[in-house]
Amino acid sequence: MALAFLDRDRSIAPAGYSRWLVPPAALAIHLSIGQVYSFSVFKNPLLALHAADGSSWNLKEVGYIFSIAIAFLGISAALFGAWLEKAGPRRAMFYAAICFGAGFIIASFGASTHQLSLIYLGYGVIGGIGLGLGYISPVSTLIKWFPDSPGLATGLAIMGFGGGAMIGGPLASNLMAHFKAAGQPSIPYTMVTMGILYFIFMMFGVFTIRVPPTGWKPEGWVPSVKHSALISSHNVAVTEAWKTPQFWLLWVMLFVNVTAGIGILEQAAPMIQDLFKGQISPTAAVGFVGILSIFNMAGRFLWASFSDFIGRKGTYFTFFVLGAILYFFLPFSRQDKINSIPLFVAIAALVISMYGGGFATIPAYLKDLFGGFNVSAIHGRLLTAWSAAGIIGPLIVNGILDHYVENHMNKEDAYPVILHIMCGLLIVGFLANLMVRPVAEKYWVKDKNLVYADGPAH
Image (spheres, rainbow, N blue to C red):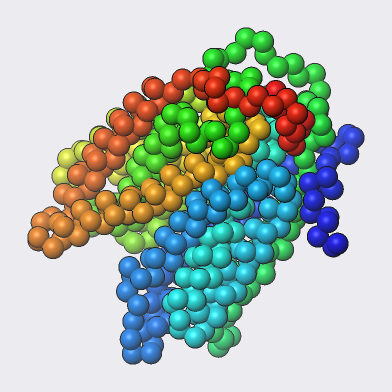
């Protein structure tokens, strides 16, 4: 009975409720789960922890923790997206908080007993499920509250995911330093503390999230009669959406955009040091990673907001055309070519802003094409593209780098190959975006009696 508070009908906004109270609830979730981007702060401490036993985990084994978490983000988003539409955002956010917090605590037991499998289970599997539920849970709610600016709405929330590392990284580092100085097990205690803190912070989102009442619309807002052919006035159910060519074209677009972004993010610090040998210190390389994090976060808000004015197709057109040009020219800024560190940093930052912008714009693109009826469920299935990119991207980057190192070739010569492959992938995305057309009538919801959060389907 206590969990009845989580029911959708208990979270309907009262009269006079301000829709601007919804983005902070979404941010509470996304700023928390965005910690996954800062997981690398645990890498060296985990390696050192197990090395104290006279044995060791290697970087690949520890790196699997992050990969498993991202894989389960996509899997859980796909599996639970349709359930979320029925259960409502509050219940989904509550379960996300439990899974994400519990994932840290289970992982802490794995760290304290030096069992990597427990860390895989905790942070990777259970925490990854929390990531997936938390990532998609506010999306459709925000779109329903902001039908006049869906790009801005999703950008506000998903911006938090990109910025979560700016909180999670320093928090983990400071906690580990604190517990180590106190003579306590630094990694297990840090993970338990973070699990509890993030659960509490995410509960703020659970308690404050509201869904609009049936028939609600912003005061004074009248839907435009003239709009792009790509903005549908009809709805498509999730069971039909994934059968459409539009869904798979957007899947390819998200996949290549994420894979290309990982081409820089995966090796950001080593890359700038390899391309500008002797000019970039390890500290400066960390600063470069910080700059990328800021642009990743800002791009999610700015590009998604911009898409409300030029359209989603126009925004992705920019990503793929400008992105391909920038990826092509980025390696020419290296030390033995133009030798311009500011140019390298500027290009990389702009590219990463589009990487983040791609994540934030895609929910609004889905809403345009498929309507708001099942947008969370459709978004959940589309996020499997992220899971795939999280595996393929590192395989491309690390495979090429390993090939150059094993064959005693200059490592810095591997980066142009990597970046030009990413350029090619963006051209594939450009072609996919070019092929996007309105969804055929045969996929539209026909049953007028179907009801969802803000009224009957139409």
